[in-house]
Structures are given as structure tokens and as C-alpha cells.
Image (cartoon, rainbow, N blue to C red; front, side):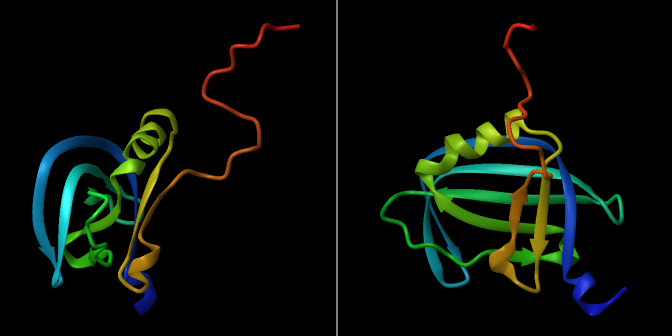
Length: 131
């Protein structure tokens, strides 16, 4: 396995949990984040069938934004978004399949949650009457 490959992990998100907080302050590498919500995404690695987790923290409007946190050795990561994005994020988890978490120790800013390439105009449910 190449060095770059050892610093990247992709896993299929199989479960998620939404946690709402009134306000929690937590330090991430010297930045105190003001957390209002958390979506914990967990799943199985595509390359190794191990358990992985990506925590997506949703922050109060006045919170500083920490840099993404990635720990490939422990199969965990964290990214940070505005609390106003939580509904759109959860909507993607509820309505798309498959969904993947990407942990990027090589480029932490690329740590992400993605769908697959889909044709334009397709949806999970199509309610149009058949011709």
C-alpha cells in the first residue's frame, strides 16, 4: 500500500445518530468550538471491513471553526459546519444511498461525506403518473 493510500480511508456510512446540545464548548487543537449539534456517522471500510466513524459537529453562529480532525490509525475523523446546515446534512443521510465517509489524513480539509455519481433528474421516489 502506498504512503498516500495509508493516509486515506473510505467507508460506507451504514448508521447515523443525531445529537442536539443546548451548548457544549470543546477544545479541538487549541480552538474552542461552541457545539449545538452532532451527527455521528458510522460504517464499514471499503478496503478493510473495519468500523469507521466520522463526527460532523454543527456549531453555533458565533463559534470559531476548528480544522478537520483525522486519525486514520483509530479510524475516526471530525469535521465542522454551521448549525444552519444540519437539516440539509441529515436530509442527505435519510434520502441517499449509498453514502460514503472519506477520512483524509493527507488533506484533512478534504474529509467529507459523499454520494455516488448519479444521473441528473433521478430521485429515490418518482410520483409522476405513468404515461
